[in-house]
Image 1 (cartoon, rainbow, N blue to C red):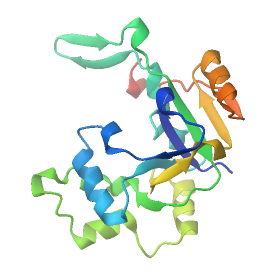
Image 2: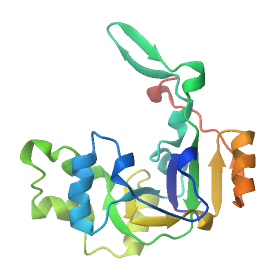
Image 3: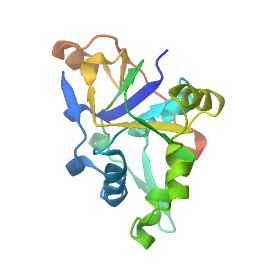
Length: 194
């Protein structure tokens, strides 16, 4: 069963090993990622864990079809015609890494106000160090969109399924040597905007 999912931009796809790189991280989260690096011993690549569409949505793959970027009192800000990203979703059967409870990850993301001084109790909520892999996978099955995994690197050619947004992207990945490449669109939910 494909339970580990990672989404990344087409221009960062390589046929081989990819490692996490702070230069490509969202600037709003760099400090939280640095805290996580100190905790787990490597700069993180994030994967959603689970087998449902809801788990896959945790990767943000569906956001590449979002037209509305923001809305506020002055109206809506729309993505322009040629500004749509081209993201690739890679799914794996097994990945080594550190599991995290996504429902408690906000404790680290929002800890800037206290210089990322996370208490031992908060760390236990996030990492649940006594849990074996089987318990994490049960949680993911029982409560979709609740488990993530971080790993230092991925061999992208080991993915068992790859979703892309269009046929040209599919042809490009096949020419690079990838198998199991499908064109697949995830519809945005009402709450995600169109």
